[in-house]
Length: 420
Image (tube, rainbow, N blue to C red; front, side):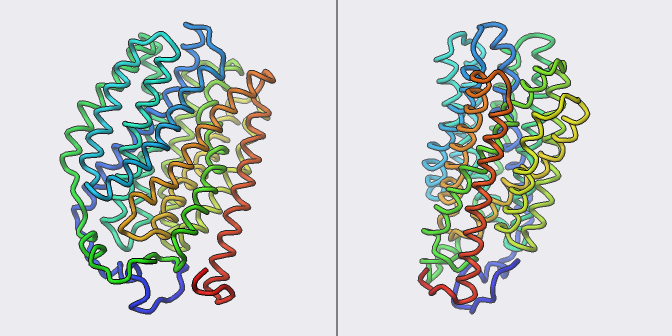
């Protein structure tokens, strides 16, 4: 880590490495990774439903993409509520609510034919479903480990990359053989049959007992800066990084189909992107354990920003696969590094709230990016403007993160007062 040496009494989390890590923590990691795979998988179902919805109902591209934005709004609002609540009552009860809500909402979605009801179903998927899984389980997994937080969060978030690639890929086969309604039903049943029994294994970590007895609870984090300053700073950066990130996640498959690539191959490009993302999350998790989450976040954001616009500059299937693999590696590192930065910047006692707060603004960015992708497509007839906007948002994110790194370095070097 890049953290400056700390006096034994300065920050309780500086002593966190002395806490024994329990083997049961890996059970928590396994459950959380599976939950991330299925949870993130639900979020990107819109990307493969856009085409059959347009064919069946004649909706515009922006109208068909809007359920993704509604999901992210629900996830943002619900994330703050349920992330904070998980600090009080634990992640297990919250996770049960999430899996149940996602299963029922996805099964109900399969019966719908009106856009307003589909919007409502996706809001529930975000608000009562994914929001109950993401921040609570990310926070819970990180709290089970002291020395390998980056690796652990990298593993858990890699489940999201797997799900974002595998779930659409499998559902695309079901849509080809049957229709999108059968695919939605199958996914809903998976939440109820697979996730609910797995959540019986969840339990709180021993580290919470030490955190609750800490004498200095005002600034017990690894950065030595007030979380009241750093968390909003990270949250602002998250908005713009996720505007950049979400455009390919929602619109890569429709972009490829517009280039006359068949739907299964188009979904295969997304699958390749997410497969690379699984590696990216593990790599950046390990990198963050060495150089810190914030520097890892900057590096991953730079790679994502430099790559995103080039999706619109080729008609080659091979090039789209290569760009997908490159973008996937960096975009996945962005999420992992941001969550590790939050874990480093926040006190243990508010781990769930901190993850939820930053995730909330990130999900708003995801929703805005996904919607503007469809809006500017309808306006211009192609995706060039949509992806250019994504790259511009990525550059804003880099400026914000660079300023935070500068501020933290000044604080450590003594240029800024301790109360900064």
